[in-house]
Length: 291
Image (cartoon, rainbow, N blue to C red; front, side, top):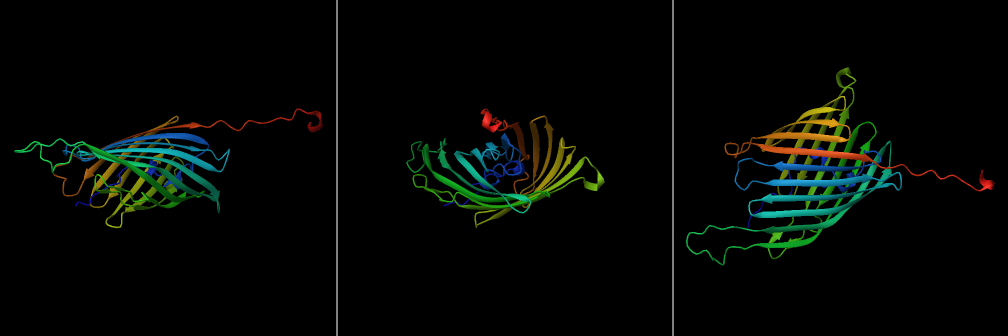
């Protein structure tokens, strides 16, 4: 039996709150729909290291109903194994104390499988070696997320609530818990074009704890640069550009743990696009009585 990491690690976690906290869906964004794609090549040059891809789509529909909806798909390839998570998110938005509280749930499925290629010294048909197999089970997430108008936010959530066991693979999807928070300091150092943003993400499966600490400088709401520290794992350097409705980002993680002599670091690419939703149609009375 082996215990290992199941959840993804992203240096651009600040653009991926929805998949780990459905309560964050649509909170803090105007009436628009946004799509986010993140690709991560972890521990480059390390044979069998994780390669991850994420696609999020979320829409703040509060101009119609006080809610937001989202769809999150995540693919992870590690060695022979392949994991896919798909969740449909719903968050109810509740204005509280000069801010917005999002209470959300995500329902979907988790799929885990492997397609191994074994190199055996003697018997190529060793029955003790697993063959290609895949299994799907129900999955659910829950989260609460609060964003204050003064620039700070906080959230708590849990993923894989059913803790599904894939019996054919003898694989247990562990329940994970998250806490996040951050603050944006506007007009830092008296400069109207400079904002400083601090973010913290803590994750645990009650066996191990992991955290990401991020600081970003945002210039004229167009360029950003920052650094992320993940204790006992990596230091990440990020840079990005906001251009019209697009956001482009790149990060490079310098490995600082025991595989630093083998890994050449981790690369991450981000593309995000947002489009405003049409306003509600204005209805005009046409009967003379209501003119």
